[in-house]
Length: 95
Image (cartoon, rainbow, N blue to C red; front, side):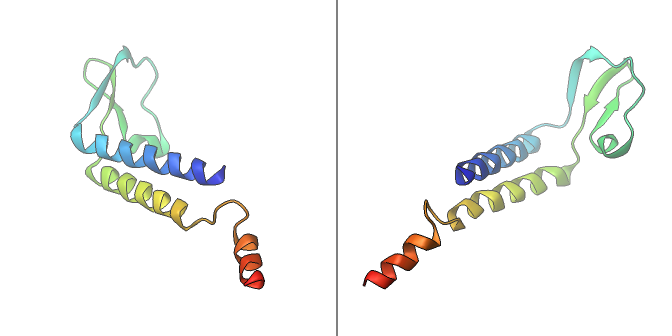
């Protein structure tokens, strides 16, 4: 179960990174009545001149998400299967 979780998480993060390469910005339909966000969200979000919320990911974010997704996906290959090391050790004893 943990293997499938990391595989799906890696694929989702990697595909979001690929989609960030294709877009320059996303303008949301709703108006931003709230003040501009503070903290880490200010890297990606902002408010346009016509008071609509804008998500504008920096260039490095796409590459960071793709590399994180690929590492997570490769991590699933390194995880042992069901039973893991116990089955491998018992097979070596039987031989």
